[in-house]
Image 1 (spheres, protein in one colour):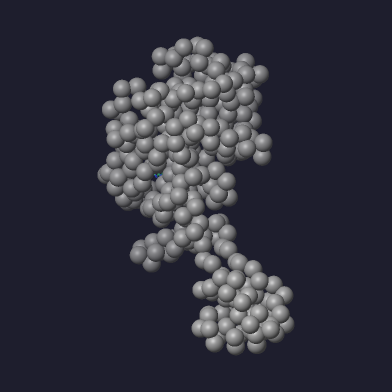
Image 2 (cartoon, rainbow, N blue to C red):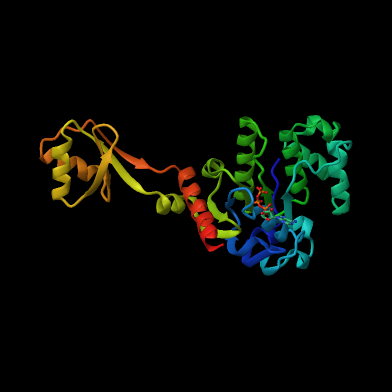
Length: 314
Ligand SMILES: Nc1ncnc2c1ncn2[C@@H]1O[C@H](COP(=O)(O)OP(=O)(O)OP(=O)(O)O)[C@@H](O)[C@H]1O
């Protein structure tokens, strides 16, 4: 069933400016600024405790910032004429009354938001729960609860969706479904901000990334640029004539270091150049391959740096 966001919500992006939240002496979110644009999936990435949920709660007006702001289309959620139609959220999929049926759960929320009964059937259909509408939420698996949470978020047909760890607890089929749904929703011009602590999930789902560690911004860019900028490029080259190869690279001023096996780890150049240098010297190569840090490695290194910095500063 196609669902079309109201035109007024189409262009509403999310913007955090100097957003800060302190609990006593602990800082959960620290001078955080970022944007999430309409029409794309923005991945909010950070290890557990990085401040993602707190940021989302401040966006939804559930937690008051100590300093700074987070707005939807330039407005605080309390200034929006019809917040439930502007923004939908999945925060904690288990926060459902266990004895209520899926239908009644959605109906109660729809009625509070002034939405018609027919919308409940539509969202149940959209998330594939029509067949379980009369089952109690307490009997649901975590994956079904996630679907019910998404149905709740979509009730008001909002232009902005805020999803906290939506892929948690889903099986591979559920993950594929959630990705396709997010892609479709973004394709309709909606703003999607979804959090995860897993780089592997982001890699396959997000267009843009906001990376946080210890409440601070670590990186904000497209996924593509993040990979390009933060991935260190190196080339491994294996040859039985390693000494000759090392001398030839040295003559060209190319940096290298020994690697396991009869191999060198070469930096600052590309495989093509190494191949040409070897060919010119008549050196046979057994292997010539670009080494890429996995995104998981990049993420761990970046967030580790923040932790280290914090540790020294403390
Ligand atoms: N109500 C609160 N009172 C005190 N400290 C809090 C409160 N809410 C969050 N925190 C702390 O703020 C920090 C950020 O928590 P937050 O839940 O926002 O992180 P997160 O990135 O969403 O991580 P997770 O995925 O584990 O939820 C944590 O150190 C957390 O213990």
